[in-house]
Every structure is written in C-alpha cells, then in structure tokens.
Length: 222
Image (cartoon, rainbow, N blue to C red; front, side, top):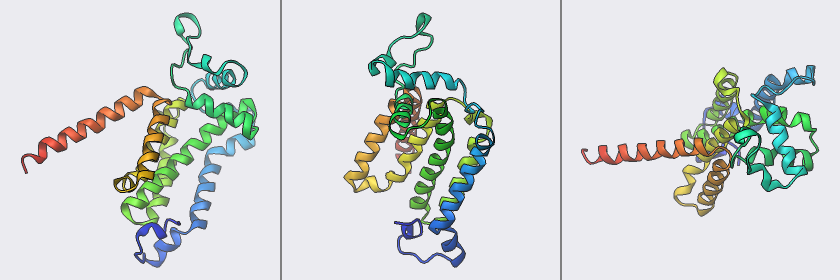
C-alpha cells in the first residue's frame, strides 16, 4: 500500500498527492543516501563516521570466526572492551559480511549510511499513519536524515540502531489496538531493541511509565 493510499480513502490535494507518490519518495531516499554516502564513493578509504568503528568490526568478526556466545563475555583488562548483551549490531555486521558479502572494513560504513535512512523511513511511515498525509512521509525523511548529521547523533552504532528500532515501533502503534500481528511486531522489535542497547530501552520504558502516571493522575481531576 502506497503512502497516498494510507490516508484512509481521503482525496488529498493534487500537489500533496504528487509529492506522496512512490517515485518522489524513492528519489528523496536516494538523494539522502547520496548526501550521506558521496564522500565514501569519492574516497573509499575513509573510515566510518562513528566512534570506534574498529570495535564493531571486531565484534562482528568474533561472531563469525569464534564461538558466537563469546561476544557477550568479558574482554580486555577488567572487561574494558566488553559489550555486554548489546549483540544486535555485531550480528547485523556478521550477516552483512557472510550473507550479503560486504567487505569487513566496509561493514561499519554501510550501517552508518543505512541506519539514518531506515530511521527516516520508519518515522515517515509512522507519520503517514498518524497524520493521514502522504507529504508527512517526505517531511519526516528529510528532517530525520538532517538530524543524524548533527553532532549528538554521529556516535556509536548501537545507539543509533536502537533509535531506529524504537522509531520503527511508531508505525505499528495505531494498528496494535486491534491487530495481533502489529502487537507481535511491537514485541519482537522491543526484544531486538533490548539486545541492541539495554540502557536506552530502560530509559525509554521509564519515560513511557512516567507519561502513563502523569496521564493517570491528571485524568482524575478532569
């Protein structure tokens, strides 16, 4: 179903309908991919724009070449290089190398380019289902990719990956009220997020709990 069809049968203005067409959205996605990736096409020797890309490359190769369970064990003096149960990114890296055939030293660059685009697409899908406006998809895609270019978001791969997974939940929230398929998707995405960055998931859960408590308390006085 196209973003324009997700508007619930409403006939949007002609300009909005054209901006919400698949070819415009595909062109915008490719444009954003070009904005993020042109430097690596011009100079493939550049390292991934992330903090400590070698750490993620090393953990992905531990999954491929050693006992996969050892990736959660203590590494280095006093466990300095341990990643705990943050296993989603190294498993992704191992799959990209073993199944897709991406080079070992390109894995981190591929993820740093792909995760912001996927996050923008996920937020765009959630915006379309919430606002019933196909242009919201394009707006969220552009805004999200621009946000990932700012300093706070040029960081660790597991941090931005968990942001993608939490953003992906938004597209299923409305449907989860009536659909067990959407509820199952939310549960599985939540599990994946927990094994990507547990600390972020705890903070996210505490935020949701605080919002629920605030809503519950204030609703008693209405």
